[in-house]
Amino acid sequence: VACAGTTATPAPAPAPAPAATARPAVTGHAADVRFMQDMIAHHGQAIVMAALVPTHSARDDMKLLAQRIDVSQHSEIATMQQWLRDHGEMAPAPDADAMHAAMGHDMAGMAHDSAAMPLMPGMLTDAELARLGAARGAEFDRLFLQLMIRHHQGALSMVGDLFATPGAAQDPQVFSFASDVDTDQRAEIARMQALLATVGGAQ
Image (tube, rainbow, N blue to C red):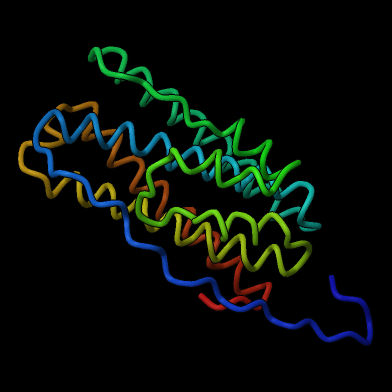
């Protein structure tokens, strides 16, 4: 809440999402595996972002949103890891703990921690993560919502790419999971867009 007699300066909108890292195309089951492994890293970054909200925002509605994101992303990561293990594939950890430690205690160390994580659609760069970690109050709220909306839109792109890949998502569990991700991310985007309107941020 702005103090009386002061005028809040709108934070500039974040830059468009950087292009996703180009990798050789895969089809069928290999595409399912890549989707699950990539989405684990994607969700891990959302957890890192959500972990900032309790100390960087004063709004209860923002804190509730972050809690929902944290719970849903952790649950979905567990589902993806179990699917990968069941199919004899590597089930990576999201490295959220290392990234969160960097954001909370050593911003200079962030590049090292996040460099190993491939950049999927909508994901934040090191500079964007640092900017978010440095923001507070209304500025943080606007930036968090703008970046998390973009992050969620990236997840929708990943689901769309999976469904457009020949032979992919034929496994009923993969199809159901990816469909649920799409539905959940769209619902959260709508909630965040409504919140963003209350803090004066650009959509």
